[in-house]
Amino acid sequence: MQQRVVVLGSTGSIGQSTLDVIARHPERFRVYALAALRQIDLLESQIERFNPVVVVVVDPVAAEQLQARLKSKGIPVQVHTGAEALIKLVQSPEIDTVMAAIVGAAGLPSALAAAEAGKRVLLANKEALVMAGPVFMEAVRRSGAVLLPIDSEHNAIFQSLPPGYAANPAAHGVSHIVLTASGGPFRGYKKEHLTEVTPEQAVSHPKWSMGPKISVDSATLMNKGLEVIEAHFLFGLPADKIKVVVHPQSTIHSLVQYVDGSVIAELGEPDMRTPIAHALAWPERIQSGVSVLDLVACGQFDFAEPDLEAFPCLSLAFEALQRGGSAPAVLNAANEVAVAAFLDKKIAFLAIPDVIRQTLAAISDCPLTDLDSVLDVDRKARRYAESLVGVA
Ligand code: NAD
Ligand code: MG
Image (cartoon, rainbow, N blue to C red; front, top):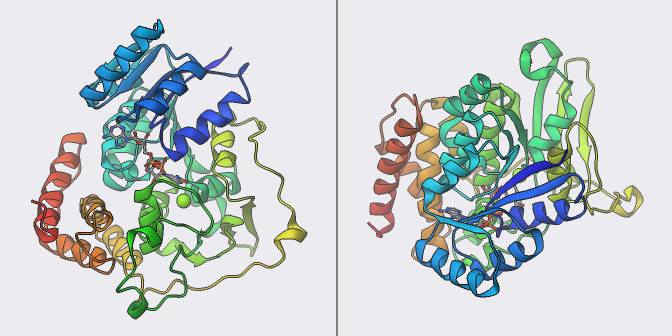
């Protein structure tokens, strides 16, 4: 039987890569629904290609425009609008699999609803776990959802851990895990070289092609910081068992070190279609469109410690993880506000960690018990960070 898939964030970088893999396997996958914020030109072509039953366009004006276009072409797809429609969609008994690839905090409610509904959840939206880790993982446990990481590092770790690891993480002789970082477009820059860097420079990543927010996160190393927190929740490991190493070639996607000295890693071309295909088909393997790695052509692999002086966002993420409770949610909210302000040229690159540090200091911790408590602290932190960047 075909797996019926919903692609949340279908117009984004991960969404488009997901549809590219799905298109290679029409016998295995049926695109039941697509969802995006408002990019209706691209959505329209995706609808014509994949013929979904439902489409959610969160922006109501864009939804109306799309509906009119589809009507004039006689395409009979249901168009829904509003963030609530995403929740209803992922709860539908008609679907098996949810690709959660909306960017940022906006992706949390729908990703969490998919976990609560016991779906097969392909999680690209790392912010959901950073904000709501304990709530999210409890929902997965309670519902029996199958949670498969799409982030290339976490997908690599998942592939390098033994089957049955999740049931009892302490029992498998894992010493620690190592997340690799490309180092981003400013690798090798010292702090004084970072004062003048522009959004255009920050979003041109040397190895991966990604949306603007995660591209800036890669440039500040906050992406790695968010991934450390993501790994903590996914793999049940404390902060001191999660290490980061800079590996500019981005060929080794991450590694697991075992107590007997063995190291198991996953390698491949830096192309998100590999983890996407892995998670779509797991536990089977399917073609992804990615070429096989040519080791001789790779030549050399380099490794270095991250430069925490020039890229303090990584340390801030470790601190938030160690503080626990709502601190990672505060970190995430402040980062989203600061990154948006940097992309809008309202603040400098080096102001991003300052905004996050000050917001973390200002917002007191509270326990995270459910989605409302997470959204509440997210709102508070966002308001504070917005006052710092001058957009309140
Ligand atoms: P992107 O900016 O290319 O795409 C974002 C998608 O989210 C778009 O389809 C957009 O319409 C949708 N969206 C944005 N705001 C929305 C809202 N309020 N409601 C509904 N939809 C909304 O981003 P991306 O690079 O594809 O990243 C998506 C997620 O995957 C992020 O959480 C990112 O951290 C994660 N991720 C991406 C990569 C990558 O290589 N791009 C790798 C690992 C993890
Ligand atoms: Mg990653």
